[in-house]
Structure formats: structure tokens, C-alpha cells
Image 1 (cartoon, rainbow, N blue to C red):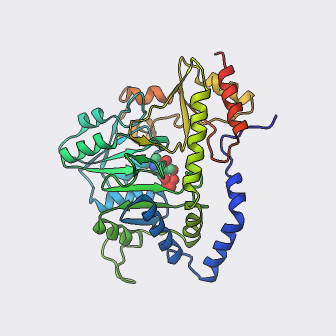
Image 2 (cartoon, rainbow, N blue to C red):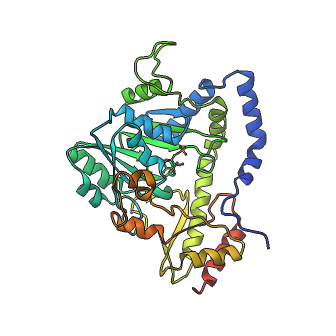
Image 3 (spheres, protein in one colour):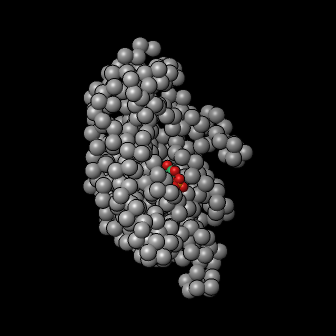
Length: 369
Ligand SMILES: Cc1ncc(COP(=O)(O)O)c(C=O)c1O
């Protein structure tokens, strides 16, 4: 029997190949290789899609987060609260600017940053919270927004996994002072290379980020700050404009697959991620919690049935070497640490067939422990 891959990007790429080759041909004809009109068009289209006043395209999600820290003038002596249940790039952002990352635990049911733990960890040095919409589901935007306002600190959204997800009808990336997006190829909206973007309604912030991404250069060969080369390439701008047109359809298919999993999987070992009322996630990853130390057994069972799975994330960020060296230890974030031993991601990509989804469901239901 054929395998059910964890992710098969080639099904999407091959369908778009002709369209993409034409667009790339235009970029070549126009010599628009770095920044330029194709990137600017994508910025306008993505801003309009999000309902944000400004989008600044950059070369990765990691750069987007870094530039947001710079634009907020966060630096040495400052603290930034982040979840440890995320991809490591969220935690690099404060570190890159010399600030201290302070990890908050997650809610055991939604697996999102726990507002109560955030509140406990705020000190008079805290300048910002970076919430992460983990797996494309949405964190409690209202509560984190309220905490940020009351304590006079910034709320930044790491929306690298949540392109198109909604909180009360409004897209993620538009709720805080700024949002960071990644267009890594496997993301819901992926480039064919690397890419990222910052969304914001604050015009001054957008201009500052635009300048910083291009060597802090308002005019050619004049540099007014320490800047970077974090520009997006023209090819990626052109590819992203094409893919953006399909994003809602892809997200709807992801939701349909998630609904099939939620309705079809009946296993005493499996628990699903809960969603906050008022949110509509986009299932970048469909992960389940596998109880009773059965995670590795279920993974093995699925692998024997030819079904690919993934573990996001086997080592929580606070227990990675650079953060251990800052003093973080086992036991600091009990819910995060427990989940990392129990999490298992099932195949999830819009081009999966119903038959493949059904095979995954049947295989999970057949697992006896
Ligand atoms: C939550 C999160 N934040 C940040 C990033 C960093 O994005 P990039 O890989 O584009 O630098 C990613 C993805 O890779 C991510 O999943």
C-alpha cells in the first residue's frame, strides 16, 4: 500500500509550476531581483488580505521578529515574555537585541501561552509579550491584549504558523502592535525559498522596519542607524502573489481535514487541541496529545502502516542549550515539558485526499497501546 506522507509539498508545487515559471520569467525580464515592484505588489496584496495598514516584506520570519524588536527599541536590560512552546526563532528575537527572554508556560488544553503565567512573569523590566499562534490556532488575543494594555507593554503576534487565522473575525497579525509572518516553504503560505513579513497599522513602525531591512538607508549610501540586509527577493514576491490567491481555499481544506480527524478519531489515548471560542484556526499542523506514555508506540504503529508523523517540538525552547546557559531548567514550565513528551503531529496538507485522511483515522483507531 502506498504511504501517507506527513507532508508532500510537490503536489502543490507541480500544480503551480507553469504559473510560477511565467511569473519568474517576468521578474527576469524586468531585472526586478531584489525588492522592487513584485515585492511591493505582494506587500499591498497581503496587507489588504490581512486588513493591516502596512506590510513590510523581509527575507524570513526570524528577521521579521528581529526587526520588530529593533523598531520597538527593545534592548539590554529589557525583558520579553514568550512561550517556550514554539519554534526557536521566537526566542532568538529578544536575544538578538540583547534583551532577556522570559518563558511563560502554556494552557494544558489549548497549548497556547497561558495568560495567567504571563501576568505572573511581568516585572518592571518587561517591555513586550510575543504571543505565538501555535499550529495555526489562535491564542487568547483578548486576554493578552488586555494584560498588555493594563501593564503598558507591547503585544507582538508571532503569526508565522497562522496566515489567515481569525480572532473574532479579524486576522491574526493585526491585533497587536505588529505581527511577524514566515513564508518558509512548508507554511500555509509558503515561498519557494525563504521569506517573511511584518504587518502593522503603525506607519512610523513600518517606515522604520523598511529602512532597517535595507541597511538603515533612507537614501542610497546614506545610513542613519545600524541596519541589515533583510530584503525579500523579487522571485519570492512573485511566487507569494500567486500563492496568496489560493490561501483561503487551502486553509478551508485544512479545516475540512481537521474536522474529519476530530470526528473520526476515537481513541482512548488521544486528546485534541482545544480552540478558544471566537477563534478560527488554520491548522498549520494537526497535532494530538497521546496519553499514558503511548506517544512513541502510536508513532511506531503509524509508521508500520506507512503513515508519516512529526514531533513539534521534542525539546522545548527553554531547555535548548543557549537557554539552559541562561539558567532555565527542567521543572520550570511543567505543562510545556509534559506536552513535549506527548505530542504527535499527523499528516496535514491541503492536497491530502479523503482516502488518505481516512487511512490515518483508521490506523489511529486500530492502535491498542
Ligand atoms: C512560530 C514560528 N516563529 C518563527 C518562525 C521563523 O520563520 P523563518 O523560518 O521564516 O525564519 C517559524 C518558522 O520557521 C515559526 O514556526
